[in-house]
Length: 150
Image 1: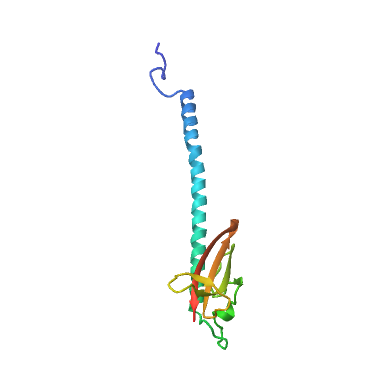
Image 2: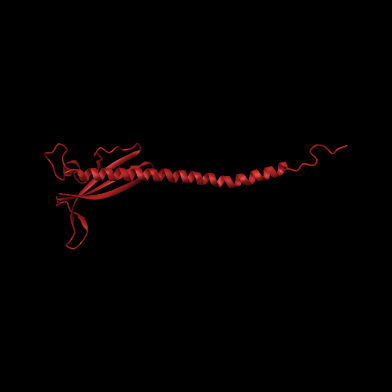
């Protein structure tokens, strides 16, 4: 008689298949952690980019305002954002959900002659430092600062 239909065929045993699956699982589990870390980093980077764009747009909107316009329809920077603040962002830039935007201002003057320093000077009325801060979930924030002058 013949030895049977499967007697001459070679293949993998159940034990070999199980070992291969275990090795694959051990290799895949760290990869899942890397994907999770990558997703978190991408989300954080996206939020950072949104905050940076929002702060820059708000600062540009403030710089576009006249410095002092008490009789103007919208007023100037001195009237809309009197020091020290904080004031809500209000130049019309859309603020995404989960983000807050604040503006702080201070009257400043140039430091001693020959110095590039700008120092806070409440008596000065011709130049203001404007700091726009955007905060989003997790307490993360982005700030940008600029000067507005008469």
